[in-house]
Each structure stands twice: as C-alpha cells, then as structure tokens.
Image (tube, one colour):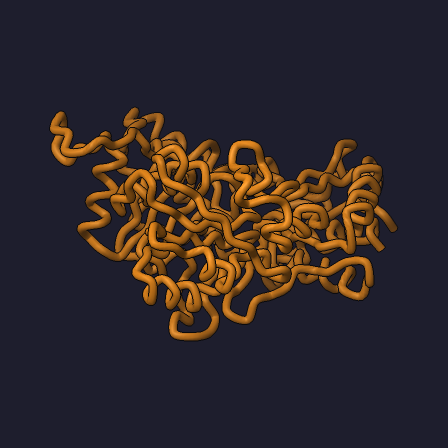
Length: 406
C-alpha cells in the first residue's frame, strides 16, 4: 500500500530490520509517520538515537572553552586518517573550500584547465573559476552517473593540469582507469569524495583501498546530510605526502606556517572544535550508517527492479556503493515528473540531483559548448529522481515508498 502521511505505524530507532541479530524493537520505540513529507534524511532521528554521546562530546568542548583548534580537531583528524588508511587528513571549513585548497596546494595557475563532470554539483567548477582556472566539462556514464574516462580523455588539452573524479551518489568512479589516464598525460588526479566516504575499491590494483585515497589529494564535505555529516559545515582533505599535507595546512591558515609570517596568499578555512567532536562520535558508526543505507537500497531494488519504466541504480564492478543518494532513472522527463508528483501526494519527499548539467547554466555556459555537447549528462538531468535514504530507514518505510512507484 502506498505511504500516506499521518497513517500507518513504522518501526523507529533502532530499526529492527537493519539491526544486528538478537536485537529487537520495543513498542515504546514505535512512532507515527509524521503528517509532513517524509524527508530525504532524518537527522533528528539520528541525533535522538545517539543523543547521550553527542551531548557528552559537545559538553566537553563547552567545558574546555577551546572552540577553535581544540584538541578534538586533532583527534578527529587522526581517527579519520586511520579509518581511511590515509597518512594525512587536513580538516577545513567545508567541502568547497577543500576543493579550492586542493587547487591552491597543487599550485595551479590562472588559465590552467581542470576537468570536471558536467553532471555534478557546482563546487568543483566554482572553486576553479574563483581561482582563475578554467573548468573543462566531460560527460558521465549513463549507469553509474560517474565521470566517463573516455570523455575525460578527449577533454584533456595542453593547458590541462588536473582532473576531478567526483564519486557521485555513493560509489566510485573508475579510478584505476582515471589514474592511468592522469599518469599518461602528467596531470593531477583529485578525488571529490563528499558523497562516497566509506566506500572502497573492490577490484583491480587498488582493491581494498578507500575512495579518496588514490589521487594525489582527496576531498570531502561534512555537510549535515552527508553519510558522515556534522551539525553545521565542515570538510577535509586527504593525502599521502607529508610535504603536500604541510602545504595544505599552510594554505588553509592564511598562508602561514609560522604565526604572522605569510609565505603565500592563503585562505581562512578550519573545522571548528564542536563539529570535530560531533564527527568523532559519528565516525564510530559510519560503517553502520552505510550498511543501513545499503540495505534500504536493496529493498528499493527488490521492489522496483522489475518495473519497466524505472532503471534502478547500477552497481559498478570496481567500487562498493554507500548510497548517499538512491537515484532512479526514468524513461523520460514526463514519467519522472509524474512519479515525483505521486510521491509528493503520498507524503514522500524526493529530489532531482541535478536538474541541469553544469555546461548549460548561465554562469558556466560557453557558445563553444552548446546544448547537445554532453548527451548523457543532459539526458540524466531530465530523467533522474532520488528517493529518501538515510541511517534511520526501515524495511517497512522503504517498501511503502517503493509502492508509490509501482
């Protein structure tokens, strides 16, 4: 039966379907579906489940009163480095800053070109333009939504200095192919891992490595809705080279290694202590959060994969998928828009990521790259729709949401 706001009971936290063997959900843990749209993420529910740990971590920061560069920032950086298998983690203020700092740390100069996917959030292109760099767009693969290595190859020119592999919606680009392409052409591979933290390479020479640790620099965002999100803004960069890590820290700290000595022009970008404390709590449960997302996706797949009007997300052979988004592809825009309206009428929020490819936005449009230049990105923008998926999902809820589309 299709989900309606205000009716039906659903299991609340911790959801029995996704709990470890032997655990149960009590009657007191049940709740009514709220009489508003079911949100794409349930941050209130996540906070309620770990409230005591969050409150304790935050209270410790308040008691110490060291809100900038407190000990929790260094502790979280070390914890995340250990989790990722990265030698160095440098935290910063947000994911867009992380990309800008990557460009700055690699000494890219005005006029240099950076390859970014056309089907993507704006951050990688935006950060490039703000530094006087030129974003050069490439198309994506229709199944995985990730950067197409062949399209990226054709975009490389004499001014190309870097390629940004955006691991979209929770699974990795073909990093082995992109790494080889970058090595052959002498350009830098930057990984934007804001949407796939915790996912790993499952085949090839990088098998077992976490996404974000393959390129010369990896970046991420801790925006609250991310798989690993804080209670505000935050971001980080990962790298394996000590000298590069030192340079990133300097660029994020006004260009100074020694206080009041400015060796280069930098920016002010730091993760505050309260957010670091929150992230340390959430990092302990990241694999669990991702597992719940994966199980919710499995329910969606089971319920929707035989619907001829819908293509469920494609699982790449080279990467695990942690489902930052669960994104369907419809036959055309009319079918997608009709489905979205049915979800809205049933009390379910959905999102279109992204409604227009970057090369067709006024801020990035060039007559040399007209409509039709990237057919896959353009088709996806008119056909994709993302369903709710988050750490508090239950089987019952996923089944009911899927029923709205059957």
